[in-house]
View 1: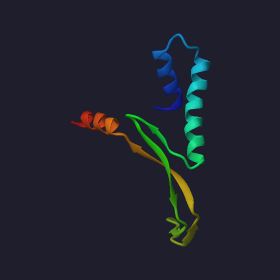
View 2: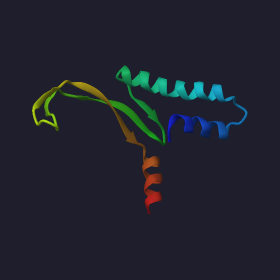
View 3: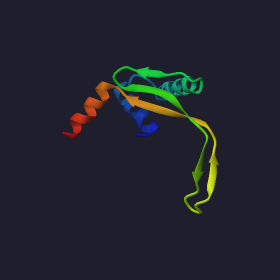
View 4: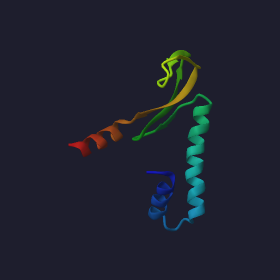
Length: 95
């Protein structure tokens, strides 16, 4: 699902809300999660999962095309851990 499909799905469930307002709400939702992660925080959505960040140390990598060594700088990456309810619902679909 892409952002526009999410806006359409929310619009279908809430026909009384105008589309521009739904787009603002969806953007605010993602912007809030992003801002919290940028600050090094954690976002927990019960039944869905937890967003956090993980720090990666600097390392020496390899260029796959040439095979030469490349310095990879330290960085912080987003990390998602699905909640128990989400894991169970997805597992039930495979059974």
